Amino acid sequence: MNMNNYIFEVTSENFVDIVIKGSEKLPVIVDFWAPWCAPCKQLTPIIEKAVNSFSGKVILAKINIDENQSIASQMQIQSIPMVYAFFNGQVVDGFQGNIPESQVIEFIKKVSELTGTSPEIKENLDRLNTFITNSNWAEGLEIANLILDIDPNNIEACNGKVKSLIGLQKFDEAKQFISILPEEILNDKTIQELSSNIDIAEKSFDATKNLDKLEKTLQDNPNDLQAHLDLSNAFFGIGKISECYTLLINAIKVDPEWNDQAARKKLLTFINNHDLNSEDAKKARRQLSSILFD
Image 1 (cartoon, one colour):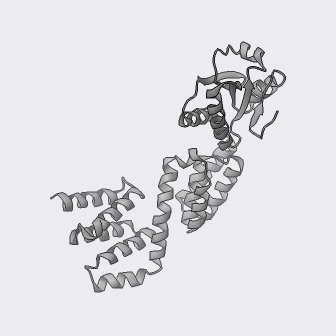
Image 2: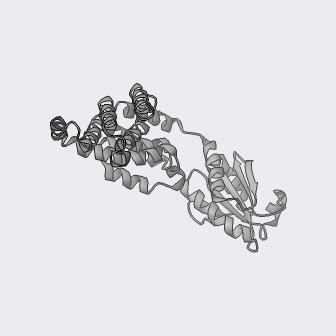
Image 3: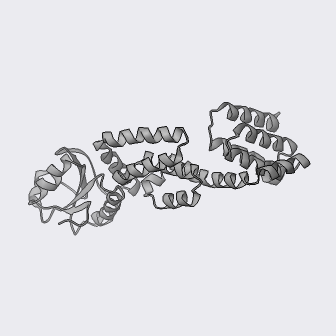
């Protein structure tokens, strides 16, 4: 019985079609369970949730061993829950017992990667990376959406879409897109960094609207530390990274403790969300260390 597009109740009658032949197209997770098995009742919903979150990269075959003893015997099932992964008609991985959800997700993620990436998606990912590198945000967004139509959980495409939306100043749309991503993608380090970048980029973009006013404020009062911070946002937003760092270093020189070390925290936030290994970042870190520790 087909429970949804990715989850099937499998019997001896459809085992070959769904598990053996089906695994020639996609990896198949096979969950051996029974109604009396308490650990199965805990594990199976976790597996179902995880399989659904991968949106078609794997399918789940559920086999009740009480009703399908011939399959259980053939697979030499000694205890349950028992989970196997099939690919190209063969068992390629598995685990026994009730394991934590994080390990279930990692197991299915590993299995889902067996199919690799299609040549079409690889070509489009290359195009996406080129557009992102050259700040061609509209084209990047178009290609990212094209990839995600084929592979909704492609992490590179998700990253590219968020970067493109930020580049287009579509901050609310970027936040909305991130909010609906499945857990395994939200746990990706790059996605987490981009999520932080949205707020930074939004504040920076808002600050650029008042660039002339901010520059005049600082010119009239060179010790206005809030003006240093506000203008650093604007400089970061328009890509003047060196000038941004210099403003914050100057603010720290005036008063390192001002506003709960706001200038130092702002500087480190910018460095961590731009390029840790750039010459500007290295210079700023050296200057910061000199101010704080000399």
